[in-house]
Length: 188
Image 1 (cartoon, rainbow, N blue to C red):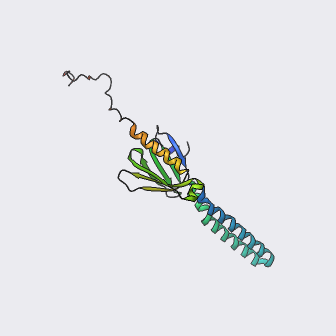
Image 2: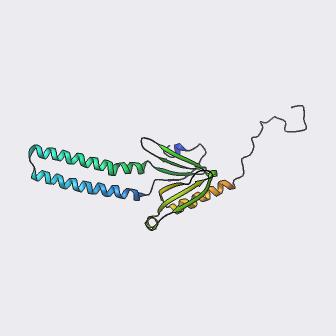
Image 3: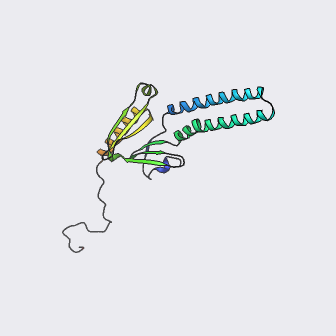
């Protein structure tokens, strides 16, 4: 059983599982390409202009700097993207993120009082946006870069509406054999 199925209750149904929109990976990808091109150029320059120990030291320094820039500006944002989950089930909305330190928010469907979305021109072209969920007593929570935010908004609205339309749960039934007659005083 993979994530997010292992975070669900036994009879809870997964409706939607999304990572943030891919647009948050554009700048890290461009940084990787640019850093690799600059490092390649500098390595070529070092190979043609330097000799011996200077060539080796400069090549190692260029490699270490390239590795640091790529880890900081490319690998870290990709890892954050990969370990951020927006999940909708038939009972609740779950948000999980973090690699070393995990953080999570669970919002039961019955507590959601308002669902909104917003997106500008670029977000509309990329089919992404910000989802705003207001619960009964808390401040609204905003979730940025939700892919296909209009669809998620409609889905979440229908889930909230359906959870409000369900009849209240039945009172627990007595075990078989107990007397249900209120006029029978023999069984107390």
